[in-house]
Image (tube, rainbow, N blue to C red; front, side, top):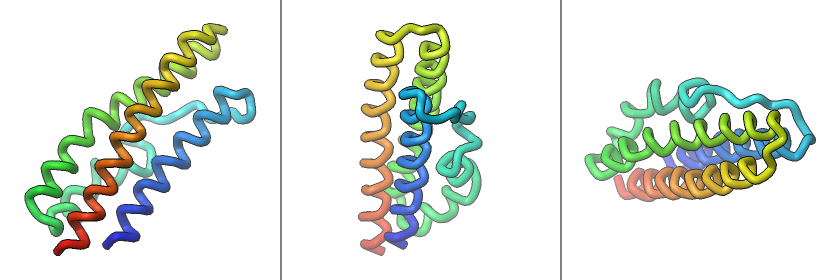
Amino acid sequence: MNAFFFQRINDHIQYLRKLEKTLKDEGDFQGAPHTDCKLGKWMYGEGRQEVTEAGDKAIAVFDSLFDKHQAFHDAGARALAAKTAGQADAVSKEVTEMIKLSNVLIGGLTELDRLGRQK
């Protein structure tokens, strides 16, 4: 199961990298709704069932990720809009928020991995 949760982390990191490249004028990725990225599809799809196998603590961790995941995507959308508007300070602010939220998401997925390995 541990490789499984690390794949979810990789999915998230790849999304963040694509977004960062666009913000640096090195790509044209325009983001996706929080339910349409790979991590979101898993969270809103089979994620709950798969996490349930790891127990009640894992379910609580999983549930705590939803708001943070949506906030991450919202910050990404604001960063892209600020980039388009030429507002460098706003881009920087939103990128900082994205990184903070990304760390929370990665921490939660790492905790899911730990809990999954205990079962």
